[in-house]
Image (cartoon, rainbow, N blue to C red; front, top):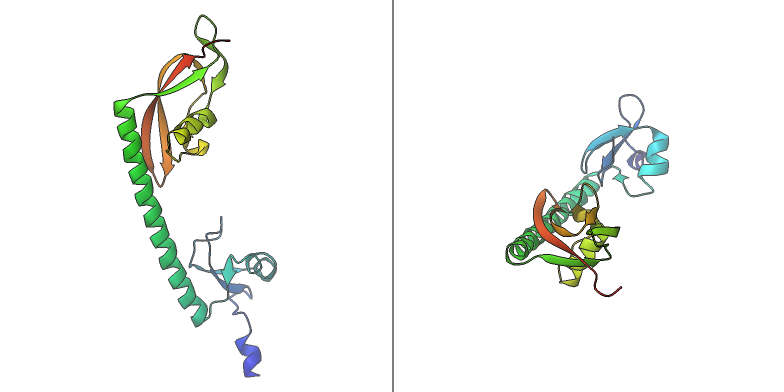
Length: 170
């Protein structure tokens, strides 16, 4: 009888399962929260995907250790992004990021320069910037110089100056 009770998932006030979230789950809670969910949702979705676990003493200790490792990794990532923002700030003050694009005589581009092209140019210079980090209201469609914002994540933002020039030799 004792082993059966030990393996039971604790029930909440309304007969629902009590689980501890191991990851952030949208519309449910953050990592480490003890939540009360319907039995089917817990057994069929949260537990098999590793999003939650049964709140035993051992699992709670493991979750605390995991949260410490995640926090350390997040702090290291934030330090790397701050360093990258400083490097990009130095790039913005010393020179422009130059991109070539096909344009007509009036300076209108045949296509456009978007986040993918800007991130590719930055990666070509050794800066690990993804296209999702480039913030453009609208794609660049004319020749000229433009200030482009970069949102590197964790509310770390910087800007670079992009010069779009007409491509030589059609």
